Length: 206
Image (tube, helix red, strand yellow):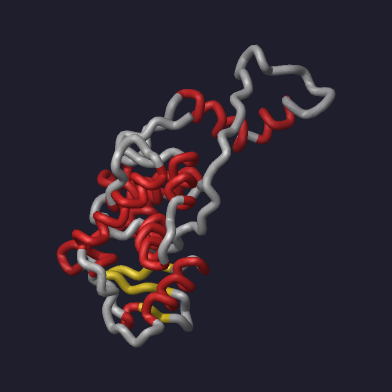
C-alpha cells in the first residue's frame, strides 16, 4: 500500500464521511471538495458565472489570482446546479462555515480526527494519482506553480513499485499466465487494494 507524505482519508473513512452527510448544503461542500480538490477559499469564492454548463467546466481563481479551469464530474455539475438554482450569484458559504460543516460531518461519521477541507484536498490528490492521472495534470488541477509541490503528495512503497511493474511489463504478465513458468520466487504477488471510484481531473481540474 502506498505511503503518502500528506495526510489523506483512507478509502473506508472517505466512504464513512460521505455516508454521514445529511443536508444538501453539507453535500455541496463535502462532495465538491472531494471531487475537485478546491481550496476552501476557492470554494467559498465561487460565483454562478464561473460555471459553464455547456462545456461542463468550472473557472477557478487560485492563489495569486492565478486562473485555471476544471472539468466538472456529473455529480459536481448536478450539485452546483442545485446550489445556484435559487438565483444566488455566489456560493454564499463563508470559509469558517465550510470548515464547521466538514468538522460536523466528521463527528457524525465517528472518525477519530476532525477532517478539514484541506484533508479533502489531499484525499482528492491521492486518489487522482492512484487512478493513474499524470502528476503534471494533477499539478494543473490543484493550481500548483511547481511540480515539486505536487510531488510531495506521493511516496511510493516497494510493494506499490512491484505492483506497477507487474501491471505494466508485458513479459511479466506473460510469465504469470496459465501454463507459464512461475516467477513468484522472484517477485511475490501483492493483492491490489480497492480504490475510490472518482472522475479523473482533466487538464485544469483543481
